[in-house]
Length: 460
Image 1 (cartoon, helix red, strand yellow):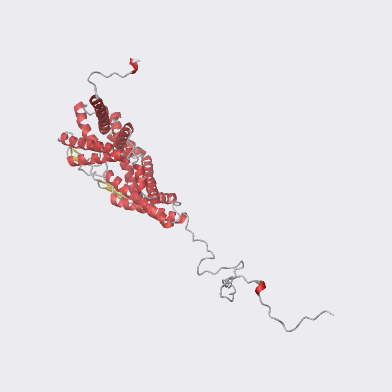
Image 2 (cartoon, rainbow, N blue to C red):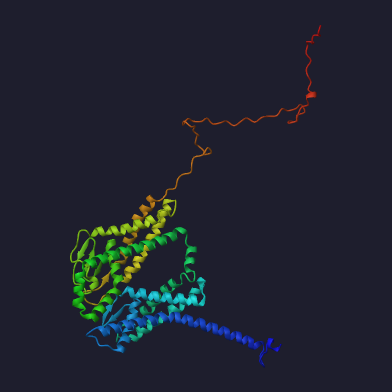
């Protein structure tokens, strides 16, 4: 039965077993480190590869462009910085209006990579999210500053401090969003917020989605009406398949920026592009870039433009209808509507800031979406219609029914006549015996009957 006994190699002792356990811990630590490093670097490699592929495709397809692998690799760095909303200068001309679609794509890559790393490591605790977010933020910050330093003006220039901070911020937001469900960050937020605040956050997200949908609708309708102008711009400024493909990709990248501009127009604040500015109440024309995405911009003012503000008013009414049964107290519902309006206002500040910026040093810049005014206008369009609908369409708190015990109220009879109040019954007093003790029963036999003067007659 020696096969069932464990044999130890010569010289093996407890110390060697502890050493094996230590090597297992080292291997586990190395596996965790490699997983976190992959989560931090994978979005950068994927984003850089995608930018290189797009630049190479555009360079190959463009008829007058000269393809160079080194040139494409150098240009991909500033291109990725632009995807992180880092302003760059190309040939001395500043470029601050950056495509938001690329930024959304990078946030999606970072969120997916962080969530994958957390699932692989089995992270469930909110405190463990820091182990994933911190390496991601550091890696993107170092990448940004290294690219900014290595540009040296050959492919463009970028401010190193901005290239350090902005990619870190974008990556941190994306990683946190990716870990919200996996590590329970959303549950922690729910624990610290009351139900009214949570309903306000949901209604705010609904209102912001409604405003973006209204802006997208206005932009889509104007672009569809101006289809002939868009085709003319494609044929004039991007002739051929290669140039047309590049122009199409450029227009798709700036599509969210155009939707945000249309949102600002519908809420009443408008936007400006160089010398061109328009609001529902005013219009000032001028020269425009030959981008097909701008084909829907009008040439003169129309009187019906203020009617477009019915769209944000409808969105606010929809938010109020969503919150009409959130609470029995009308003032509590109004507080929830104000929370939703604040969420929408803050989101408009962020989107308006990201949608604008410098566009070269010519007459086409800058692109301005007034973030502050747009935020105030969006807040009002959600708060006023939403508050009215929530107050009037929801239930109202009813007073408690009147009872007989209510002080100061007299009960009424069936015919409305007053019912006299019943007086309290007088307490019954027990007879007091001669001995002075109350409550003792009397003996009938002991009761003396007083004698009478009349004697009973005897029967005859």
